[in-house]
Amino acid sequence: MTQVVFEPDTGRLRLDRATFDTLADWAAGNETAGPAMGDLRATGVIDVGRPHSAVAAGLDAVTHPACLLRADLHQRDGDAETGEVWVSRRPAAGLLLPLPDGMAEFITMGPTFLPVVVARFVELGPRPRLPAGPVPAGEELLAALTTADPRGRDAAVAELARDAPDESTRQAVTAVGPELQRDWCTCATWTAPGGDRVGRILRVLDTTAGLWLARPQRDPTAQAETIWPTTPTTVWRYLTGLLPDDDELG
Amino acid sequence: MSFELVDYHHPRLGFRLPLPPDWEQRSDPYEGVALVAVIPAGDYGFRTNVVVTLDEVPEVDLSVWQFSAAQLLEQGLVEFVLLDEEYVEIGGRAAVRRLGHHTVGDDAVTIEQWAVLDQGVGYTLTASTDTWVYDHAADLLTAIASGFRPGDPVAS
Image (cartoon, rainbow over all chains, first blue to last red; front, side, top):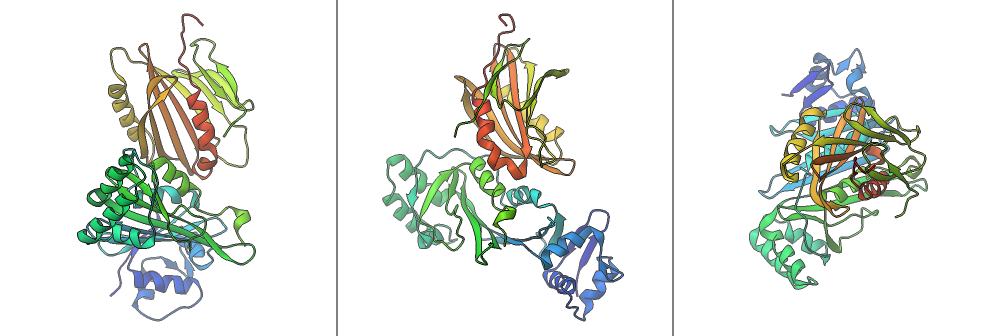
């Protein structure tokens, strides 16, 4: 059984993942038989063989993406959520965001609103400033630092503290263990003019004592090497610069 | 990062701040608004701008004044999201700096605000820019705010 809730006036579309995949396949010209197609037609998402105007630009971005963006959020309690975004050259964006009830919401919007959507998704907001400097932290250490296992996290914190350059930084990294609330990573990828797949990535450890930046890199395949204390303003600047400019697209 | 900025001096209220020389400026354009400075029209629909407003805030400290100011932002701006808030210094005076996001028509707008108290007058410098260009504009807006100096209406 599928579930589709569509509000034509607002374009708000709630559906399960399988139904979304059916809709995306249909928009790409690959119609499949099944109850999902019936629900999409009955609710007006598909209207006389065309996508409803409120979702058409978003679906076009899904089928003709110039850029893909993914945001992964891990909460301290172990909950994990992923948001997916497709951005077209029109420009328009289609977003698929998880809902608490297990459904997802598909949103069509202008890409300029993406930074605030990601900010809401990862709960970016005011944080204290960390009186600390950068600390070496590779991928394995980061993974241990953000694990739900308290013992693994304690061991990672101890290793970080050993490499801290000063006492203030040592205290700040020691607090990451008990004060980590969530960690998140958002990655935008696209095809460059030369044909290479390139992108930008941003990974943040969000603690009650402040924010740490792990991967503010132009190469999304590069490994993390260091964590830096950062601020919500710096993170916001990275978010607003995450998507490619026109001259970066192939 | 350095910018070409020229000193603006409000003719009646005496406050000063540095502005790009090609920005349009209007002193006292509306009741309660002391200055509006706007980037020249360009490709983007929403034009980056700086607005200075003044409030009389006698016998109130910065945190009390700004508590109500923060509430006004949330109530007055469409889909406002507070992204950052911190205490800073402007010209040796304690100030509050805020970063937020709101919607203006079809535009996603990033707002950055500095508030400073001096001799019972609360100065609020509000910078707004299209979110798409915030990363490029942020250092300029910080340079403008960092150069703000309260005025002395009597002496000016």
